[in-house]
Length: 148
Image (cartoon, rainbow, N blue to C red):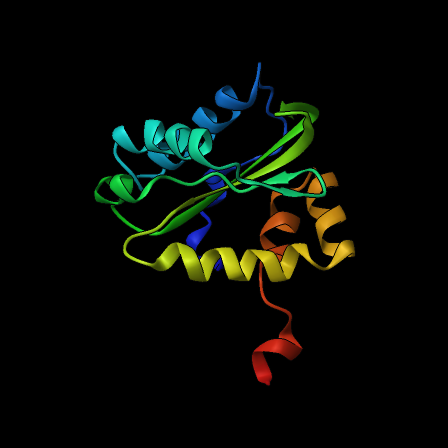
């Protein structure tokens, strides 16, 4: 997963007016690193309108609709931290991990992210981190998991 996360796609001091603004910022970040074209940003907002990407513990994982897959140039992640939080339909979100994936790649990415976020220590560290290198490290599989 770390090879999908460009350092330029990690922004740890973001501010958003609302949920849709936060999602659009994720989309623009993926656009900035060349992972998607402009239509993917609205596909991410459209996905949120059909089903929430809030996963709990202050984290949302916005991604595009099935129709938006054609706008993905290459699989990528972005991490945006909102220290002041964002109201996500009544939930308080401080961390968004945006996903762009071709084909069924999003299923694998969502699964890997879920494993990381199920670890309360890693999830808390991601929500609180102010260091890009730490965020990238936290999104890497544990060494013991890789060797098994």
